[in-house]
Image (cartoon, rainbow over all chains, first blue to last red; front, top):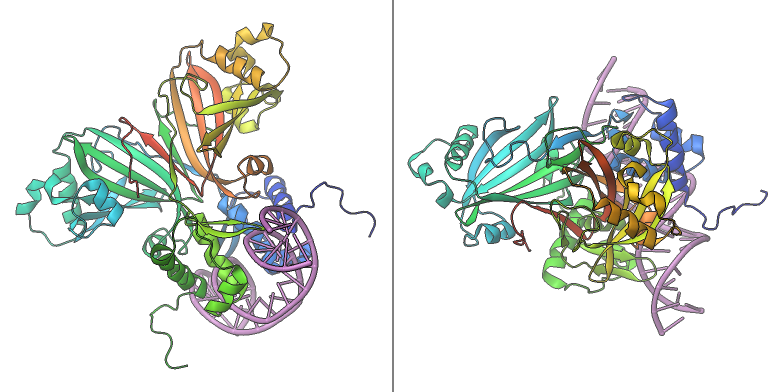
Length: 247
Length: 247
DNA sequence: GAGTGGTCTAGACCACACG
DNA sequence: GTGTGGTCTAGACCACTCT
């Protein structure tokens, strides 16, 4: 066997594999190209399939690979820059908004949301479901929670639940004066419903953006947006839209 | 065995396990409490250890659990809100900055950074290493890339490489007028060096924040910040620091 | 030394996409 | 039907922490 242990710390196989694969992706593959299947790759590197999969999983997490059951593993394109402030200082649903409303029910929001809204826990609010498309692909889903008090004009409108009703809520919201926004970003995993919409498996890593819309000194609405972490890079430009680190 | 397949879609074991564990965490455990070890838990639920681990991994990703080799699995505290705009419209290293400089070398930046800086690829720039501490814990590491052209005052200073030199670079940077900032957030995995500083294993999920500092129409500096995804919620307040979704 | 989580193996079967 | 990635098993050994 000769001398092993050339390094001070023996690196796990899957991590070394990841490095090798990563370099191969840079030099020998082009975007969209299909990799050999997992059984072949594992055999080629002389490791168990589970070990290979550990390397592939991390590369997928980093947005380098895309894996689809029944299809195969392909080289992923660079992440899409998605502006989270597309229309600064305006409400969701304002002209130019990248989202499209899909549905609207009256539901009891999660406790944390109710707390931020300042409504009683257990009290239903409008929940507008929206989807954000980029290049024909859904990159994010959102639930916008709007207490009835924020959209007094809705009390007279009695359309059936659905996209039309969602747009009506957004229209009413836009009548208010927007006092400010606060955002937070954290890592999460896709719930079953979101995963379906984003064409991913449940539990897939997502970037969860929480936005609080302020008006008249209070919280007029709260949005929970779920972005595909594998394909999206969220941008927060303080100045006009010059692309950031395009590579 | 009785009838199984009560659901339309048979849920994988690990996902069901995750739900069960998640509910148990909410109702039967307190923050910091140690869970039974993986072999016991797997036996208790009648699954293989690998299956249990799949559930634990997702819960750790969501910041619900913390696992440490040789120690055990504990219930994680809620994520810390970390303001990414602590001193708006000011340079890194300005008074009140949450970061502390640790080192400074002259190195060749990654190609993508060189492109953004507008320097020739292969040309060395100052690379200031910084760490962000919260409650005695390192929550983020950063490399700030500063071309020599942005800090002309440095040419005369000849301190040895190290924290002092890093502070000198920041001091020089603060003499410029800041034209604006642009930020991007994406998911990454910790490189070995960052993982060590953040007390995590290499490959651990991190939120990578890329900041571009603009001055005099060009890019004066680029920062690559790496936040622990398991413990951090990044906040981007547009208004003063009212806590967002404390739960 | 004892106990923990981390890595690894060599299988097996399942769910899904495509021709 | 065939091939793909996704799930699952029952082991084994390793690296680390604590006592």
